[in-house]
Length: 403
Length: 175
Image (cartoon, rainbow over all chains, first blue to last red; front, side, top):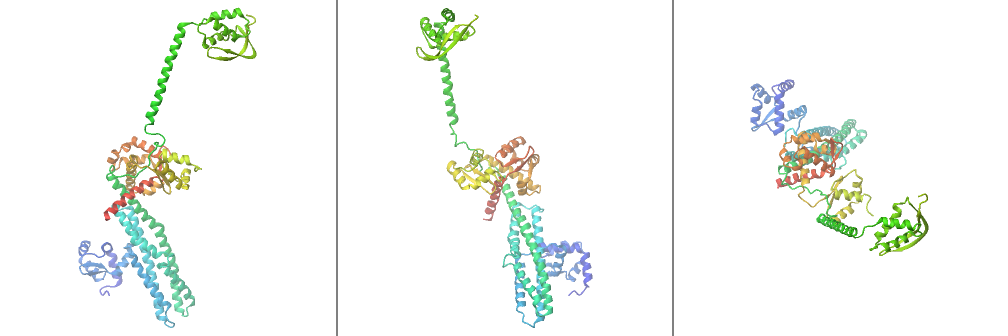
């Protein structure tokens, strides 16, 4: 009991010294207790009277050498400042025990014991209320911590970020999720569902009026509570878990890159893909191909040389005397079988009768086609030479009319 | 007897050595005949086919691949710089487009400049231009136009590599 002041005076004191009170609260939040040195540092500019009042008004208590905020004051400040330490899920688990014990007591309460029933209902109501508030504060706090971690305001190392994220998932978020999971029969949320169904029946069916009212209140709270739990569970599964998992993955990727970039040319790298031709061409394909082409180049040169030799020999020996044949043809015109005539001339005039020479003789008519007229009989005859047999048409050649 | 896109699949994976990624009909076809292709590439060429939910490629037997190293350096520096600018790297790489100009600026000012300068294909902006062409041919990026590109799902292969490095390191430290 606070002997030395009225409640409103204490509130005024808190309000006047709020910055100090807030600093004390945050110090306790960070270190669980406020050490004497911390306290001295924080109250360096505070007058002795105020320091004494902190204790006189029972805002602070001394524990051996450390100092703590009185629990109701701490809770009140937590509510005001809205910054908490996230509750370990086991702190929430205790509600399961109190809920089920109270629930059993209420169900088994003998007829005629109304006063205790009403008290139990009241306690249960308070417990549920506290549980819901704690859950909401907890998700809010976890979300804030995760977002801070994401923004990395503290410039934390990636490795530290991963550890912190893993810690939050493993010890806070995942267990909280299972407490709030309505699908899970063992979860506190489903126990509250059971409670709500029971309260719903009793608020209509209980024989005692006041108990019916209390059951009604409890049912209302639980019905709203269900929505609140759903909302928190949705924040967890839709926002918090993906956020923190991504944060963890991302930090892992980044710290991996940093390890890699510390010695980028010596670190092993993932095996990637390479373009592959080896299955279609061997390593010696290029050399083989060059060799292959080379042989064609040489052969072409040889052929060229031979041709030159042959024509040279021919030219030296006999020159084709075109005029001789033209004259001879004009004497014999009209010629009934032109190609036969050509063959006859060939063997008469040439020392070395050849196919080439034969064709040359034939050509005199076609080269001067303006002078001669050719009539095709439609027959074919065979002209036999040294190494060829020509199947040629039978042609009658005469001088063109009018020449 | 062969799947519909057999020729395209073989050409892309084997001869072009590029990623097949989700959205390409060849990729869908490959996934539908995954067992066949795994056997096919193993039996015919001795190569293993790596196929994830949204990308696939043929793993070469080489474990010291210059291109792979260059990509790791490029992505590593890019991720680091993006994180420094407060961006969500996975979201950016997965869904955003990148202007060459912005990437160039990040690399130019990077604290890993020394590493970039020691890497032949990332040394300066003209080398990097060739490098981007190469990445596009290997289908690690899609060119949207002359100024902008986007990463294909293939980049995840390299992010997984980085994650593996961190996890391995983490494991070593815990031991």
